[in-house]
Amino acid sequence: MFKYLYILLILVAVNTINAQDKTFTKQDTLRGSITPERAWWDLTYYHLDISVDPATKSIKGKNTVQYKVLEPYGVLQIDLQAPLKITKVIQNGDVLRVKNEGNAHFISLKSDQKKGSIQSLDVYYEGQPQEAINAPWDGGFSWKKDDNGNDFIATSCQGLGASVWWPNKDHMYDEVDSMLISVTVPKALMEVSNGQLRSVEEHKNGTKTYNWFVNNPINNYGVNVNIGDYVHYSEDYQGEKGLLKMDYYVLKDNLEKAKTHFKDAPRMMEAFEHWFGPYPFYEDGYKLVEVPYLGMEHQSSVTYGNQYKNGYLGRDVSGSGWGLKFDFIIIHESAHEWFANNITYKDIADMWVHESFTSYAESLFVEYFYGKKASAEYVIGIRKNIQNDKPIIGPYDVNQSGSVDMYYKGANMLHTLRQWVNDDGKWRDILRGLNETFYHQTVTTKQIEDYISKTSGLDLKAFFNQYLRYSNIPTLEYSIKDKQLKYRWVDTVPDFEMPIQVYFDGKEQWLHPKSGWSTTKIKDDDIQVDDDFYVRAKKL
Image (tube, rainbow, N blue to C red; front, side, top):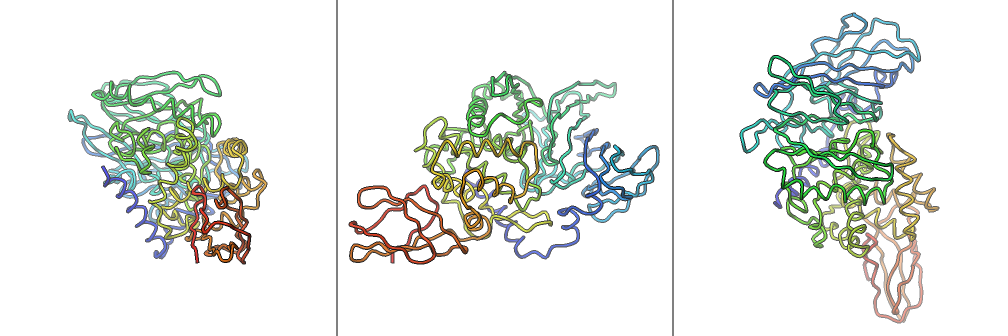
């Protein structure tokens, strides 16, 4: 069970190292930037309509792309990754010319694209999509079998991009407003996607089509397909915005096990509505769907493969003991409904907005049910996984995330900031306010930084530079001589002046270190830095 966490850390770390050494190509720019062929149109609606053939591991269908014209332009970019192929594109009855440039496909439009008009086109495609070898980290389709020999199939594609299995505007800055997902599968199987199930159509050829409608904006990688020998049960949760339907889709043999183990789901909802505000997708409901990989935060369709164990595949990632009080995947991936699906990065370089808050959310879940001391022990415990190797923020406009430290270091950055704010009520208001202010929006790091700075009343520019853009953590350097404590910050960015709580002379006290030396009187022979601050201390 230990190996899975290490595989995660190794994979993300390798990708991060490669990003630092990598020479980015035009393909990276086409994938990661807002190109002129993307900028002129705004997504309004998708209808993804596909058939999945497990026997040949292939898919075939079309995506109807509806958009609003922001500025007239004649070429539109759609993304689809090989080996899948676009077979034709139609708008207003015209078959359009498509110029392929790697995974970016440039469609020459014939119809007049008037500013403010609503247009649509149909993109037909087919083929055998990339198979995910180690989902969800490498992405694609997972073609597996359950213990009874039934097909067990799922998609996952964060980072790699949703264009690995369906044609779309594959950049995070523009979320579609709503979406219909129609998936045709063999009739013996059930298909589960995002949103609410509108209908199921039976066909004479031995297949069924499941039609799912998403009422809310959704990011591309949040769209998913899950196919298996599922059974379904549900419950109603009385939440902050009223009645929320919570649905569970699990393999038939795991039904009774799930009914017991998935009790963490309503507990999650209770804790996170407290900390973050109302669940952001009441209209689409909440689903937990069993899949043949570890799990992923697909919007309103959170996928689950943690083997019905508490912790991370039975392991406490914090070593504190508190990590075995809950199922890591249910709590972590569901927290992404607030930070990833509600508040979404515009550029994957800012992926910390998803992962730092969500890793921190694990400790808030612990706090809600087990107390503040337990929460601190959990978040401090995960520090052993921090590498401090590279900046958390990655390079922009090339579809590249930053350091794996966005998880555990990011969580401890937020825990440290909470100590500086020093007002638990205000801290909770900040977390809830983020989700209200940026409700269903894509954001930049600057927007998040500015909001927290303004609402906290603190100048946090140097703080965020230190933890997000610099690999080292602050070191409190100090000496004690002749009953005088001398102290300063080192290994810091310019203007870093975070106050810190320390214990000496029998009480907790605030120090206000700067880059230059400060002094104060002391009776003790040493000081103890409050562990809630993620810093180093070095006695000279």
